Length: 116
Image (tube, rainbow, N blue to C red; front, side):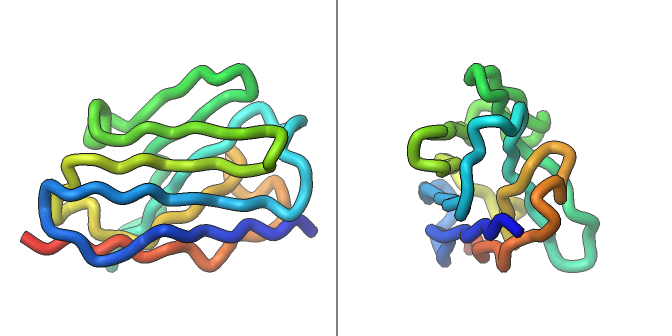
């Protein structure tokens, strides 16, 4: 079972930035789409950013222009640069395949908390 470990979250003020990282314990080369998801308290987990093996990206409207997803297939890592943070970005952030769960598990996620 492939393990996914997310890191880089924290407590930041609105307008700040964070860079989230995700390390996979096995190759992601063959995975067409990798993504970052988030789950806010009381809400369902949502996919916010995705990237194909060729580097094509897409984002949910609420994060367009502020989030940037990237991947390094050689290092089996996926990153999410988050700029201009808003309080509504507060959530636990997870990386996974798209659709989610193709590796058979989810990581612990990394908490992002944005203060106003």
